[in-house]
Length: 318
Ligand code: DON
Image (cartoon, rainbow, N blue to C red; front, side, top):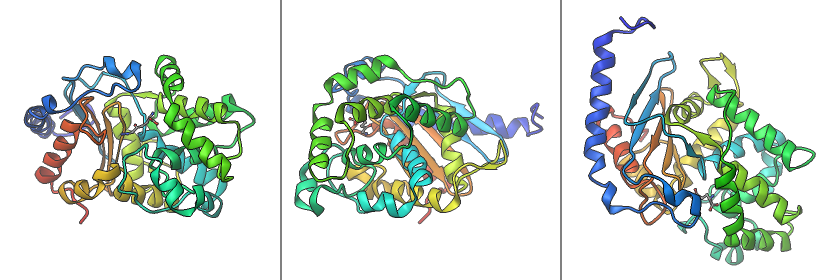
């Protein structure tokens, strides 16, 4: 028995299985590239690949070098959406951002003009996420970011969680396309605040640092529709967690969401750091890190690993 009372041989077997799946997925690393459009991300070790799985009864399994910290990047979008839905309610949020997948790259500006006068199609693409970030309540950027940090600390269970000032600064200085998206939405009244302040908050939110296990813990809360089995609290109202899980299925992997739904079939959200958070409904949360990215901006080996995991443990919700 382990100190937690779990059968030792089961723990060893699961970790062995995870390591075997990692070795298979590793073969895909050379076909991807580390993100280079944010200078601080370009220094990631392309060969990294790790996974953590967090179960409702407290068991958690890890394989690969799971001590590596990485930034949430776009994974933050689903967390901020939950916070803002709690802050403002569904009507307010969905008057300003839609619910439809785009089939376009994450930073595309194209549909902002072609459809619905500056209203972004969904909260997972950059335009929608920027609009959602602008809805975080608070008296100034610092206060709004503190509220978000407290929420992420609550979800991970790590009160020490912080963010990378270096990544935030380097993204802030190079976020020309995101600035354009903001100005376009400001023209149409979707956002009203100062664009530089909004980008300051958004780039900080993207730079929150976690490890695989912390990411898996957040995934676990989403997988249980907002219930945290560790603290025994409903930290996100059930309806809001369901909305977030649905967006993860329809838009979580951008213009690869359809293929991901067919091959993996679980609510998941990726980020350009190489992180992917998975939420297997009522079963467990998954955190994956693999900074070598495919052309869409998703972890190339991380997606393969999730596909192998899904097949091995029969995880698809479909
Ligand atoms: O807005 C950006 O460009 C990034 N900080 C986040 C984008 C991202 O993670 C896209 N995901 N694959």
